[in-house]
Image (cartoon, rainbow, N blue to C red):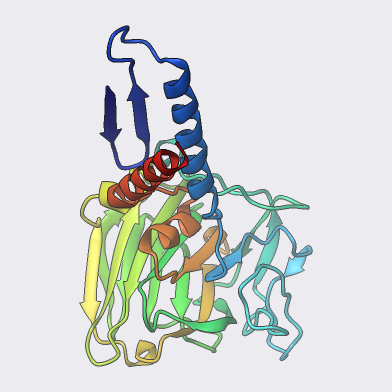
Length: 312
């Protein structure tokens, strides 16, 4: 007798001998074979896919990340346009130390080497450094994104921008002003009421939905538990829907904001974006957590059983 328990992220398969209620030899071999098939199917999905933009700044060098002079900024990361570098300002610099997401988020991205680093700006007014992506993102699938942010003071500003190539950031953007997360798509930077702590790292997770003929949407979560996948997130902590003409053709450039009137801009790390057509994979790309669709897991299991039966 076989029992199947299907959950969002695991399949438990227990086959018991009808008479003894313990696994017999043939059943045990079947269980082992099915387990191998499931593991093999799951291993086909890599932690990071080809549709990802990733920058943890650990492969950069001490000093300014960007530069006002064309081509003089730093490169590094992956998923960026070949030969393109961070640009627009030299006030955002590499600093020592990686940021780590709160343990309760179950965020599972492991940052690279060789040196643990993040970035921080010291300019008194608005500044960001931007860089072109290797491909246009978000034209056929939603963009999932995440980043880590530590706000040293109430004057700190930190976040990301889209499709801009100037020294001063505008919309579209997501920025924390002190403890409050703010969103902008159209002309206005909107207060959300969503807050993060000071002097502590926050995980910002988001989804950007682009409509070339209508409004765009930001869905944003602050310090969510990502262990349950997309379905386990619940409603976004904040949502903004407005038209952003600059996004109509997709995302071609991303930026990192960090500045403050007291020269202690937000400390920023681990920028990741993915527009993989499989939303579960895009989520995994930006969180490190892959939660297969229950239906996909069931199909994998049933296919494995059918294959084993044919071999008998």
